[in-house]
Image (cartoon, rainbow over all chains, first blue to last red; front, side):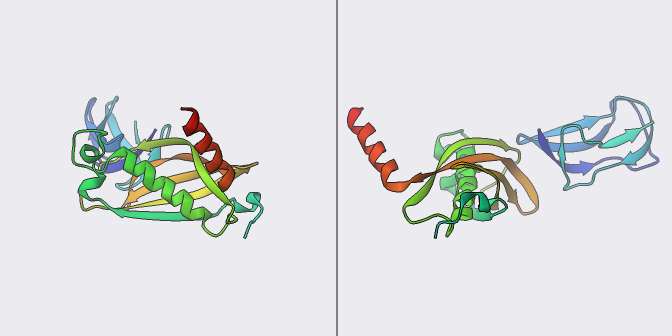
Length: 63
Length: 135
C-alpha cells in the first residue's frame, strides 16, 4: 500500500495523548488519519506533507 | 529500428492529460462521480508505456497489454493536469515490465506495474481476425 502524506499535525517535543491525530494520509482516494496509540512526547517526525510513504515506513516516533 | 529488447531496461516514456468530463468515472461507466475515472488512469499509464517504446520497435512489431496492477491513490477533479511516467524495469523474452507512476502536480495519484508483450503486428492481427470469425 502506498500513501501520500497530506498533513502533519504534530511537531517534535509536543506531548500527545492516546487517540490524538498525528498525520493525515491519502491512499485509495480516502483520507486516513493516523492516531497515536501511545501517550508521550513526539521525539521524531520522519515525514512531511507531500511525501510518498510505503507500508512499514516510520512516520512519527513517540516515547 | 529493432533494438535488442533487453537493451530497453531503463527506457522511460510519458503521457499527460487534462481531465475533461469524458474522462470521469460517471462518463466511463466505472462509477457515478465526476472525477478522473480509474480506467482512464490505466489508459494513461499504458500510453506512457507505449511512448517508452516509440522508436524502439521495428515497424513489423507492436506491443500489447498483458497485465496491469495499479493502486489508484488520489482523487483528480475535472481540469486537473495529470501526467504518467513509465520506466522499463525488466525484459524477459518478449515480456516487458514497466513501473508506472501518475502525478497530478506533485501529488502521486497512482502507482503500479504494467506488463506488455512485444508481438508481430500482422500475425497478431491475423490471429485476432481468425478468432472473431470463430466467435
